[in-house]
Length: 192
Image (cartoon, rainbow, N blue to C red; front, side, top):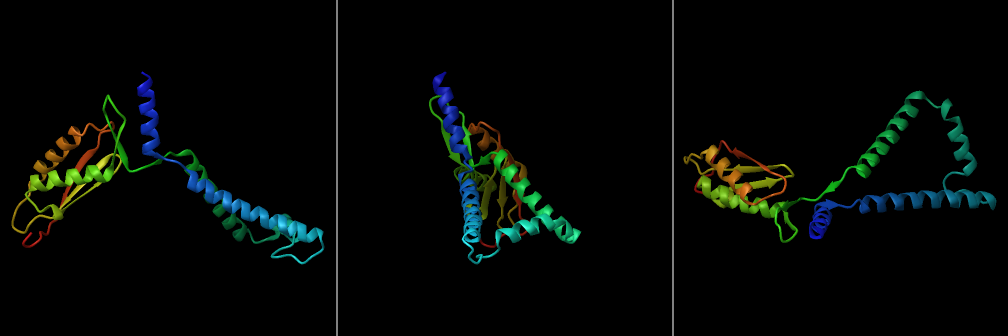
């Protein structure tokens, strides 16, 4: 029972990305802004010339924002609201890494999407009887898209490739099922 808890923690840590980069960027921006405001206040208290804007002018312009054109104030308000909404969504939503968890009893097994795509491409190319270089696969959280470019004049059975891809994905034992889709180019490659 304890190992299941540890496996869950490990797989969660490996499949979700932290928001530390966003937090660091925001912290640096806020440090710069507050340092600038603090410097302006100290310069005003010492009676020296302001670097950019004096604190009195900042306060006056903030108070007199009602006198500004309504369109400009509305645009600035909308931009600030959108930036705030993006930051709230980024803070609340989990960041996901391009990885999947395999169901195993003995260990926490995490596989990168590129590994799944590579194996799936090999099997799809074999099932379609095309060159492996003519097969690309992209794996996302819920879908695997197999893209084939057949050899000119050689038909490819889409349903057979889709069936092979689905069976292969099922054999991996992914915790969350991934659905396979097959796309076949209308134009084939010559001599491949």
